[in-house]
Amino acid sequence: LAHAEKQRQDNGGANPRPESPVDFGAIVEEVHAMTLRAVDKVNRPLLKPSVRLVNNLCDQRVPIIRGDMHKCTQLLYNLVTNACKFTERGSVSMSHRFVKETQRLEIDITDTGRGISEDGQKRIFQAFEQESNGDNRSFQ
Image: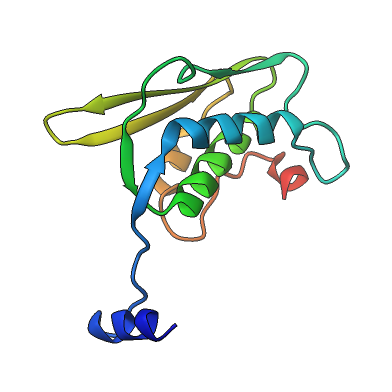
């Protein structure tokens, strides 16, 4: 605890970001398993029977990265479950690519859902915003 407090003071009062080895391949497998079992507020499966959840990372070597394992898991789970909520049929897929030039791991979540309106795309990354298309209340 004292070490964490010293780091916080050394960073000007900001909480340090935990950095440790993160196995994104394992995170994807965990998120895949959790999503298959996820339910909505009325206990219906989040993944509709007409939607396939595809893990394109299995059987591939995904490099270990440095970061916060818990935040990476939460971020990926949020993206995947959000895709599942708004995909009525087709698939939600997870894939990756490692860009050697920048030493970055890119994770892609793609779905066959209806997408985000043009207006929504302009606002979606602003704080406290979400797409409002009429049926999102059932997912809160």
